[in-house]
Picture 1 (spheres, rainbow, N blue to C red):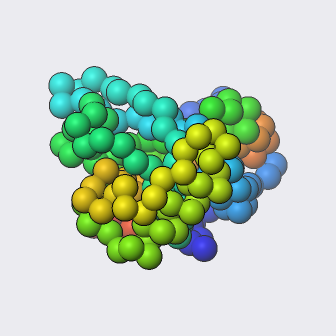
Picture 2: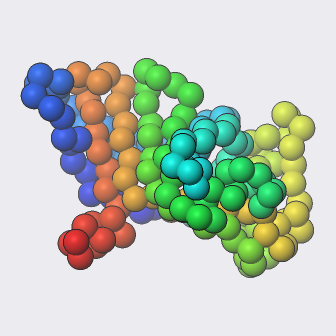
Length: 172
């Protein structure tokens, strides 16, 4: 499991004065693994935001989801691959910022793992894809850059920063 750098989000004066706890990354992984609906926010070429709910799975420390390359979301990320992803819970919050790539060609082994994860999670809801569904694209991978999480905003707001983001920040 990837272990990000754990810190506190920056807050303007008066927002969160004295938080008492830090959430572990395992809490975020648990929430991302078991969530059913994920909201993914991308940016249209004209600069306007676009949000879409997706079914997704967490496999090998990444979020994977599928869909047609002809959708608005797919067109957006082909122009600008940076997205925010959040779960539906506004009390036990997880917000991920990262970069999405379409896996136009992926290994059979990876597609089998993803298909099994989808089947385990969504078969009762009527979705159990085969690995062949994504032989030529339509599978997307979200790599984490930062994440925010809290179960009580005033008590435990926590920021997670991933190595790739730390490296990019040092270059700037």
